[in-house]
Length: 628
Image 1 (cartoon, rainbow, N blue to C red):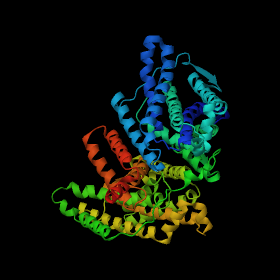
Image 2: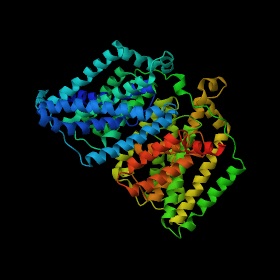
Image 3: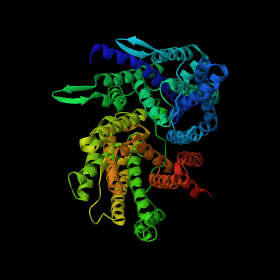
Image 4: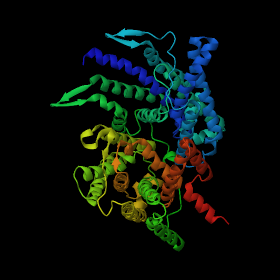
């Protein structure tokens, strides 16, 4: 690789940086003021691109090709801004008083709804947009041809940064936004109309995202995978730059884009006789950068610690052991699940569905140990599910170990990963903790995707079948039920043990917990290791249940499923994750078979449950039971 090639890739990286910055800037502004982690933000970026490719030919026929192209970009930005304002008024305004994690669940439901709405309106096929008028040629740079439109995009990022800086620093609206970012309660106390401010901020943020998506019209086709892919990159950029920092968002976008460009430019490199294709790192480069930055600077490049009110866990009554009624309910549930093989005489699908239920219950319960007593929302819990599944699959297929030993290898693999990654993660708080867990999960996913000699690459490992007596549907189900019950009993005992009490103390007030002598980081590290270990057990059971394992088991979607299970059931209840796991598994099973638009239907159901039960299903049932 020559210096000219490296420099060319660096210049080309500026165009990618602008796209990342535009979607991240809107997300940063929204979070800074409303404190909402908007999971649907990538959907507005996607909608901006779809609207632009739709409006461009219509406006082109009416006003000419040039005005049609640029008018479509402006129109898409305005429409997404209006849609964002509508979402804030109709949905988000109803849940500002709800716990922050339930706001995240509501916006995830909105992502599902917008995804299927896009599918219904535009269909599943990719849609190509027109080329940009006046910018269809190329410019020779360092012996290579660089598209003029890429140069234009490279300039757009700094221009938008300057405009936003002027708006935020020189206008009354900007002063209100900065004040709300620093102290939202004080802004309300001064008599500022929060409702209008929040609506304007949400419209601005979604409009910028739609503008960023529309600008990609001449570079990439509109497709349904953009929302989640862009959302992950946007979160990474915002966290690297520091929450609420527009300058940090641009520098972080530039850093990520340049690292990816460098990996592409380096190609295959040789170190100590070993060759490695650096371009493979583009799959996970942004997460590697984020992990390094957060370890060195826990609040990002230009971020500040969140206000205490944003980091403090919700106060709740002390947990109490089960009463007589509760024990009877648990006993009845155990009898019911133990009797599933009898139901299998009537329906062969019953043990299969029940197996999915108990695996999901153990997965969700392990995550609940962090989210409930610990107050730590992990966005990457699937890493330990995947490590357990791959460890089990490798031990069963390659090493030829018997089923119990293979499962033990998977559990040890997940435990080792949780101990290693947890040591770094527990030093962070809030969204920074969540994003570092996501970074490690994506690193594990990348290894599973590319280490073909061990993991099978994108194809995964096949033929992961258990030995007798676990080779039948009923035999494997009863074994999985036993493992799950043991895991749940261990988690329950830990919650009422000194470890659980110390976790809750650190969640409610870290400063007070440390003042009383609690080693907060050590307590959280131990809880992280236990949660990852039990999650690995769920992953190992999953490998045997499906007979194969692929990188899909470590995807972001798997981690999101875990979050939805815990939040749907209720964070502040030991029964919550079990109810959420059962509810989501049954919803997915029933809805997916009924309609091609199952994501939208599932989103509507989740959204309805969030609005009806803002503290989860367990909290709703508790209110109904205590009502006169």
